[in-house]
Image (cartoon, rainbow, N blue to C red):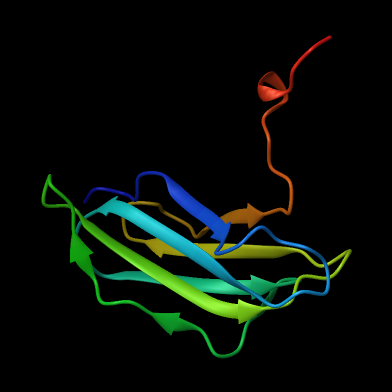
Length: 108
């Protein structure tokens, strides 16, 4: 079994508190194709989650996009839960309105 590669959790548009948006979780690089991907708001499953068709990349590993409409509010925590046989236990990947690594910020 090959566990998922990078898991990307991102919003469709630049996120602002109180504005409707779409939360995406893109999981790629896994095999076999049996995988559970869920979107969570404050640790609880989100409603109206959509699942794009499973596809595969240029290396023949599987990938899938899962998404849901959401309206971010200050204090809410959104995450993507991924469960796959190669992981041992489910992994959680958190989304944030601002996610810049410290090294990416200019120093003056």
